[in-house]
Image 1 (cartoon, protein in one colour):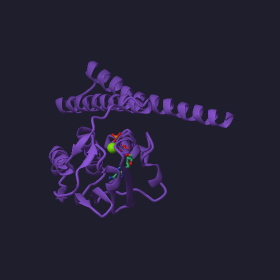
Image 2: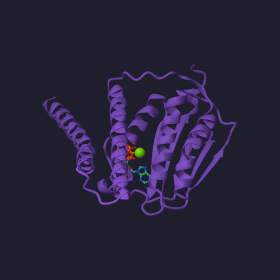
Image 3: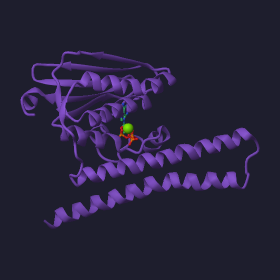
Image 4: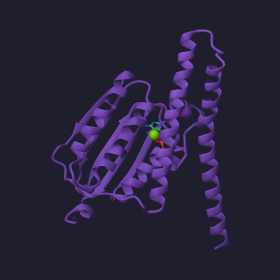
Length: 240
Ligand SMILES: Nc1ncnc2c1ncn2[C@@H]1O[C@H](COP(=O)(O)OP(=O)(O)OP(=O)(O)O)[C@@H](O)[C@H]1O
Ligand SMILES: [Mg+2]
């Protein structure tokens, strides 16, 4: 019991240490760069625009972080309310793909969708499902420099699956077990440069589990990564 309590305190402490760190970093940038601009410590307009760009990016990062933290705390308290209905995953994927298409082509990446449109419908929350799929696709775009990202919708005898596969930097075997932990980033500094805070996958996993599904990852460093979401058919069938 005492040990459990200590563990709980440690995790809590770590959680708040992480939050403070994640908040402090963009705030430092905002402080520093706005001062540079205020004191006109730049020599060209381009240079100034670059600093403004950093300000904008960091403000966006803060916004994203606050949104994610809010979402996470609601989920931890069991306060997230899903509106469950029978949803067609093909339609959900179409929407997500459409949203991420521009980001992918901006980076010169091919985005391919291969959807079996006659898979069973899934009992879930359409918007949350889209949020999760978008998250996986955005990760793939973020962590892939060249090649392609593919999303597949299919069905086996026992489950419906969505797989997001990329030809990106990959994740090493020893880091793989931790990617769903909140604030976990592979090679922290490099990921930060990519703009992440390490919350996306922990939220995605929780949302999928709340909808009765499971999420898996497999990856090979330097070759690419695949995330797969599965919904068992027997657990889905009939229970509206
Ligand atoms: N497709 C991928 N390829 C390689 N690494 C990945 C991939 N998806 C996730 N990762 C690694 O797992 C870490 C955790 O991912 P997660 O989505 O939780 O956080 P993030 O992308 O860093 O930030 P955000 O909270 O904005 O999503 C990432 O920082 C990255 O290092
Ligand atoms: Mg992410």
